[in-house]
Length: 312
Image 1 (cartoon, rainbow, N blue to C red):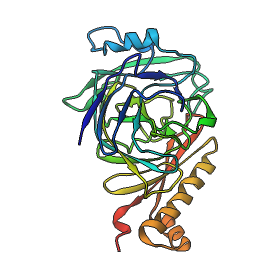
Image 2 (cartoon, one colour):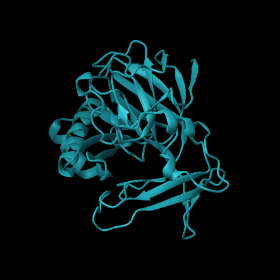
Image 3 (cartoon, rainbow, N blue to C red):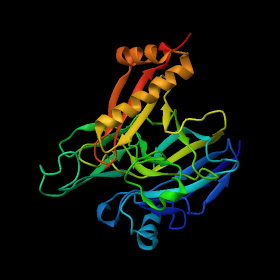
């Protein structure tokens, strides 16, 4: 299938927002593969010393509108034939580093413990792509597992321009560390073309992302974008080679758990033919509710269910 490339630039990046009114930077056919370059962070996080800094980030810092707080997103990419009510299947074929450093920030009045840390701290963290590790200041070599914190389609037109910080039905800043290369994200479509964007590259992150940042870095993603008119669900789902994943995003973690659980019950009915009662039982016996993140305004919970339990 055709393969396209979207570089990161002031023309292809939006700083801080999703907006259905934003014109696509590229239009592709369903099934095409798109390589997307991203950058991460403002001028204040750039390291000193002998590190590779993607040169286009300076132009992005200078020229992109930063009036909406949030992430630097590359896109959107439109898919011909995509219509509201369909689903965009995003196959994450590859995720790779674009630089040899990342950063982590603690900010007062933010994160899971907003009142416990009164001073800001910025760490620039060296990344070794060949070794697949990040060197933390106290000497730990932490394994890298890169993924995009933000992947999403344009939200409903009536929402207008929205910050990229809060994840919602269009996905966006879901910060789900399971979505590495080799996994699939399913996104409900709200606009013609779907309008897919990504950013917020992470070198590594724990479930929760508790201090408000992961190892933030610049990534290149390779995606296959497929329009699915045989799927009708209205909230993001995902799958790994071994698990189905459902999601809930809301300011209330209890509500997040309920959303992810209810959608998994529906999924088990669809994929394994289970009754609601049997699906609820299986979720209690074998489903894993995990906290995706606790820091984005709308928090996140995802439920994982092993695929091999559903084979009939």
